[in-house]
Image (cartoon, rainbow, N blue to C red):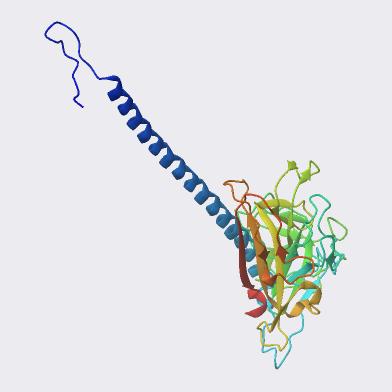
Length: 373
């Protein structure tokens, strides 16, 4: 087939492409266009899938980072930490808790870690009472409690001796104002002879900074206005909090929920309202490393309902199931996911999702540094 150019013929007529030639050219163009669009669509799907997987991975890593940070800080008592050879001289607690309700979950700072085991899809052992009704904890997922000095909290050193019932004099820090040290807040004061937890009920910044600890003010309040004893110069003073991690979904507009949201990792600090920290966390399982021979090493990992002495817990084994927020693709997720072996009566094995979301299981073991070092 010979192509003709658009030039004037000898008789003044105009030449051009034949109909067959045009159809061939259009067909080739269509094939090339379809191929280009196919590549573009495939690239878009691959990019979306990679982004979805990356988001799941990022959510899992971030959730672990938050929990690891509080776990490693749990049980800190400064120089008062009674670390000795436990096999020869088992240590006794050097911490005195002067708070009201000092044996309840929110205020028992003598226990660095505590937990609730999901024994069914509606119950936990011990009975779960510290998580609010909205959002309620997801059945089949465990609840982790840590008592720790929170990151970013201001720390002080005493700059003079003081009586047990007097305000605590601390070295001035121009960076710490009343706004940066809001009261009331639980505080631990420690030296190498021991430590005491109390509720700081007031703070006066400035050159002669002091911390007050009056009785009856704030939640839970101090049992009395005096500490267990006086402390000397250079005693460490810093806020501590009970931090609770659990999995929940918002199903209504009851505060702190602002509508319906997917499952997420929630965190409750002290008596404050819980906050959603990582979306997509669908389940959480925990086992606790128990030291049975006083060598500061975990001899067995058990669920919370099988821990008989929380003071012997030296590490935790943590697993979470994380899902993508959006559904993509065409294949449905029909896998079974097992967390920590999937042997827990109330959870551990998760299946029947039948949706088009990406899921991954993340597992880690965290040592309670302040208990073992």
